[in-house]
Length: 140
Ligand code: ADP
Image (tube, rainbow, N blue to C red):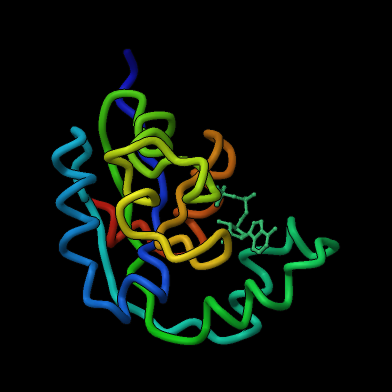
């Protein structure tokens, strides 16, 4: 199995409820290592650019407003098959469909306010990491 890196965001609904540590503990318990991390406040333009792939979707404006509503924690996770493993630990997008023990099942409020983001493929992981972190922040 390959050691990969993936990108993760603790979303506003979770930072607001003081769940950053609880969520990061679930990622670590699942076998992922947090190799870079920072708490930031996105601008609307940054949120719109990050979710540009969803620009035509009906929930785009709601999603971008949500992502700027509170600070977020952006992080890089490393481990064996980290991209897929992270998605497993996160659970399904809609918490109603998520398996027991996943972050979204345990903590998400709704389909939109679902506590955590994780890259879905190697290309997006590389793009998303580079969007938020410089080489100097990624010593591992
Ligand atoms: P994931 O975050 O699981 O990769 P998507 O890429 O499909 O899911 O969607 C990105 C984010 O947009 C979701 O995590 C969720 O916050 C929001 N979202 C997706 N679908 C909806 C929807 N139908 N209504 C409101 N928000 C949504």
